[in-house]
Image 1 (cartoon, rainbow, N blue to C red):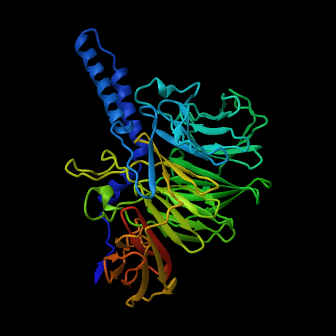
Image 2 (cartoon, rainbow, N blue to C red):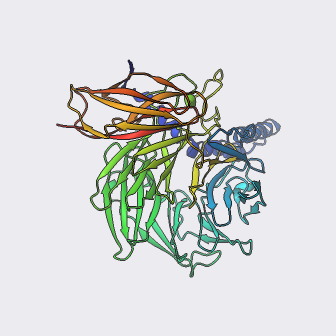
Image 3 (tube, rainbow, N blue to C red):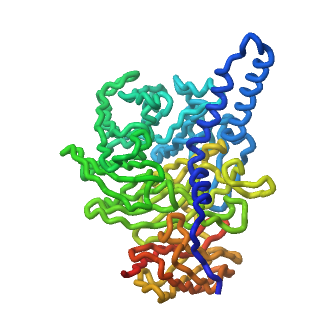
Length: 555
């Protein structure tokens, strides 16, 4: 028997991995500040040439560090059986916002460094022309980018995207190949931008709803009244921050927004990172808010998506948790990804304090829930009906983005920070620091299939329960897979005060063969009473498949 143990994390480990998780957002600021400081401290008359040389050298060093960290200069396509990568046509694009136009078989993306809007043609498998965005300050500043977290396509085929630095939304006309810019009618003094981050366009193309990281507001744009170069036609709805009393308002961010058109509702995520999180519903007809309070261990909700039954799905970007929120009852059901792969850490075993940081989340046409794992380096799909989680490993890794030693070969992440899924379940993602976009080959058969029994159980402390896991190979050659277990018992997905014993740690399967693995779980006396989710399954180098089991620990 091989034991799968949970263990308590040391505080310094938690802090280290939390900082690692937000690097993609804040690291660019640090390098930019170094660069800004180096060019703002002008030489004195006394020091003259020496200071000039120092400033010049500091500037060159800052640019070199920026290019090395963010430009993917040594990046190559590292495709696998389930994921294909495509290097972008220009240098240092830093792609972020991405959208799939299924009607015209195109994938649109924005270069946050070069200020261009590009398109990949899925019919010809080639990149087309990249359109220069009229105003983009980062284009001329060697250590700057303007984050474009969201890109959407309206019912006329126009491309919309957010712009951090200019505090605006852009619209690109597919017909005239021209850009319009719409200013946000607010500029916070402390930040200089509301930092537009998430938007939704209604199905009629009449209104656009968006939120900004640095503004507790919902913005509603009447598209017919919006005018190029102005803030006309955009209305502000202030978000109440009563639940964040006692927290510095500058630390409270808006995560994202999603529209429920059938019920005329918006949902917004709010967070004071690693401190407190909240979901708010907003009734568009009655102009009223409904707050949804979250458990204490969910403090960084960001991504929002509605499933086909109007349940809200949320990613927590401070843990390894994603969860379902019933807007009617307010009930929350937590799920978790698998634990962080040792491959991202450059070692043979994982770190108990490491988080996968689920980030953005979207619903496919068939009802599948998709999300990206920021530091887990995976694209994930979850079936709300049979509670199956599929995780697709992204084959690129950058050692500069992880706790990687120089002597280690495989380590780091690809910074797959944003993605889109279209009506045909086409899933495309951007690799921000690797100068690539990628595609999940959702039409390919997974290497294995997993089923479990029981689907739920009640477990007394001091007792145990056997979970039977059937693993079936879908390969036409011999398959080796490692068994995997995680759960909502801890924020990292580790089992914590629940221990587990696999009858086999790994399985070797011939084509079409099924093997049953036993997993015995035993709670300690310290496991708090409540409802939990246990995730069990198997993984290969390309993908993992886990099934969710509901576990009740009675008082």
